[in-house]
Image (cartoon, rainbow, N blue to C red; front, side, top):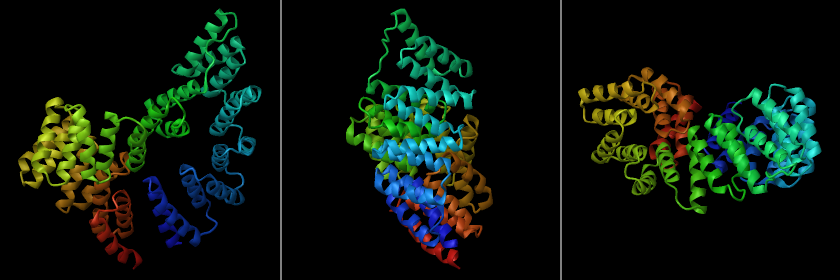
Length: 456
């Protein structure tokens, strides 16, 4: 069991970090140890799905259904993958099976309504949406879906009624507001719907919904929708950019890196992409790569404050202390309330044994924002250098909650746990760090030493 847990945890970490092929190796080793553990099959299926290896994903889901025939999440995911692979009929059956088990399953019912709309089966779409209204009368989304279908059927008065009910539940539901406007215009034009949408327009409306989810902080749902539409004509650029930004907001920098790299292959460079790609490289511990993209961003706008800070971080971590200081000072000239430059200047001052400056910069950082993750990271780094290991635990854990892919935080937490004789925890931290930056020799060396403790 211990070997299974080790392989499974490793696979999950590698998958979360976007290292799909390495994750598959670990997860398949876990299956050898425990061949009937459903979660492993599910993670493998999700990886194959994201890699668009649909036959492999479907094979995993078939095995999963034998182990857990009534798992709602698996049925919904299986249905989505079937539809992506072109088998819409079987995908529909998976959604129907899940809803028969639980009519209140919002995710599955939403997928079923969207499928019927894409197939132009408006009668079925309306029945599915109205069943959702009946099962969950407090869910605004189903009122909107019913209204949207009725508008397509040119039943504008009924559609408007559903849109209004949607807004009674959620007054900020922008799509319902646009639906009411469309219905009013159609009624004024004696039933002529001037709002008939092309596939490109529908994709753009999906993008608007995803953008609203992103703005409200619901990054998981935004990511699901953006993954669906990122290759649709007319929205590829915006959807890919927003998807990368959603991954950065969740602190999943490896996955953000992959999205931004794909963006640059297909689209003209964008300063937001260049900056966020540089920042992602910084968080992954790949500082020289970060410098390249941050420099390009600063060539476009030499007063890009956060790019100046990130360039300072890259310089600091590669030993260019004078250059780092200059970038931090330039950032502070633009905004003296930004806590991040103060935090990194405190770490620089510590390297030069200037305790007075350390206190001054930490104080200024705390005054600007006491919860700033970078300030917590710097405090923890200083605590580790001074062998106050237990004191470093909480700030590092807090930092990693907001940025699970933070290379330096993972290494520091690994060092703390090793000194506190939590060798398995230390091993996990260094392994996660090594997944972000496989070229880091320190991680490799420490992992070899920790492996001996873990095995013993």
